[in-house]
Image (cartoon, rainbow over all chains, first blue to last red):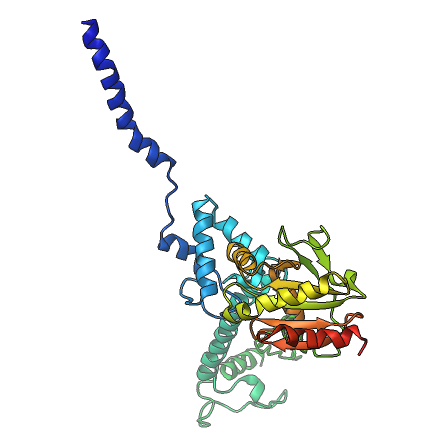
Length: 177
Length: 195
């Protein structure tokens, strides 16, 4: 029995050890970031040499080096924010596809929506005015009338038949007589 | 029989005056900012005879100047300064790198000329490999934030070399690579002789 144990124990330890080797190896291995992971960050950056070409699609050697640097930093466990900050520190804020939300850069984010809303408001006001004008071709301000004189009546004139303002004025005058 | 005056108040139209004033102030402010931006962008490229504004170059470790990791242009007053913009991804830079190093070695001992390598829009591992490939020994550093290249307002590319006299005045601009060591010396030697 003892002899059997002596033989089995090393065999068991060997098998146990072999079974763990792949697990240990896998856990120690740093996964290589995929192109998609690299490009997710790269598309938010622009190389100053190749203006207007996002880093993820830029074919130059410089941009290729930048993408490899992103891959290396991802493999080191750096976050997206860390990597972007590194690029800003190293190459300046102009490498970012979106200007940082600081200082005067806020204008980029504030002015367009404000201008859009102001434009929409002005259009709304203009439409309101046009609508009213189309319904009221003549207003009281367009007409000259002196107190005591009979205002031009709607009947027969043909011009002010629908003039609500004049009608209201005449009604008021009648009440006061 | 007294008649009260009839007041027909026409409905108010148009944008209130204070809103109009605010809008105009805002528009003028935006136009001012735009003009300032355009003026800044249209800064004239530094030409020969211009005084070069001061800047600080942070140096790569191993490529320091007198053991210091930063070099300020104004601290180099009295020396001829050769500022070379390069990048590891730039093939023409490779054709002049060895010549620049040889020229630097010919002036280094006298201490009257200083070469500064400015690594433009590059990645550090590749930049280090480049400097190692050509055994560069003069001070070299990255153009952090592209601030130095913006001073020279160059967007043409690399390599570019600027030679400043002892007073910090720009005396020569080389666009593209040097072809030989004598070509570099032919620019520096007359300045050393005070010409």
